[in-house]
Structures are given as C-alpha cells and as structure tokens.
Amino acid sequence: MATALLLLGSFGIAAAWILLADARGTQTSWMAVIAALDAAWLLRLARTRPGPVRALAGVAATALAIVVANFGIVAAQLARPMGMLPWESVLKLGPHHAYTLALLANAPVDLAWIGAAIVIAAVASR
Image (cartoon, rainbow, N blue to C red; front, side):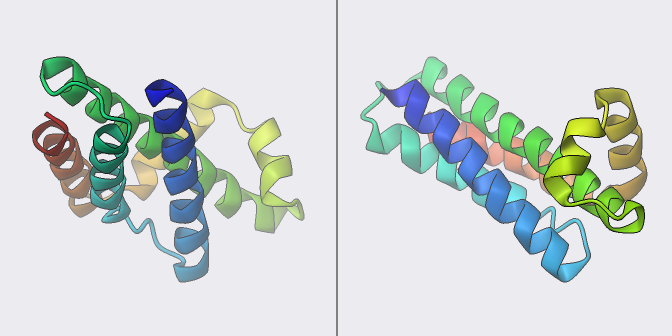
C-alpha cells in the first residue's frame, strides 16, 4: 500500500510540476523541495516504520518525481515548435535526448534546488 501511494504521489507532484513549469516558462526547480516534503508526508501517512529504509524510500520517490518532471518539461518544451501535444512528444522523446536537453536547461541554481530536495527528503522521511 505504501509503495503504491508513494508512486502515485511522485507522479502526481511531477504532473503538477510540469504544468507549473509550462505555465511559467521556466524549470521551477524549487518544486523538487515540494516533492521531497510530499514524499515524506506520504510515507508518514502510510505509517511506514521510521528508519533508514523510510529515508531511502523518500529519497527514491523524490528522485523519481525529479526525473519524471524534467522529462515532461523537456517534452512539453519540444512539443510546441514541432506542432505536437506534450503527450505526443513524450512518446517520441528518447531518454538520451531528454537527458541532454535537461542538462542544458538546468542552471546551477536548479541543480542546487534538486540537491537540497534530496537532502530534505532524506532528513524529513527518516
């Protein structure tokens, strides 16, 4: 039950992050911290036993949300110039191309937000 809740939460916060980034036209990497806090809250809501396993689960859920959100943001940014809808672009975008474009799109400040989110997930989830 906790795993399903955590997966659903990760994909849900990633979807909100993609929509916000698309509306603002920026990476909005501060949403990674929101994803970390959401993962910690979901783990507590699922009454997962405290400890290193719960901290690792929080970090994994946060990392999943970060990867899915960045993939979706890249796909949404590529969709407009190509005349496609974002979900059509997701199906055509390969992982290597998405990784390269995400590296180009994320500034050092964005990487700092992502790093902070991983640390916050570990601390808040334990």
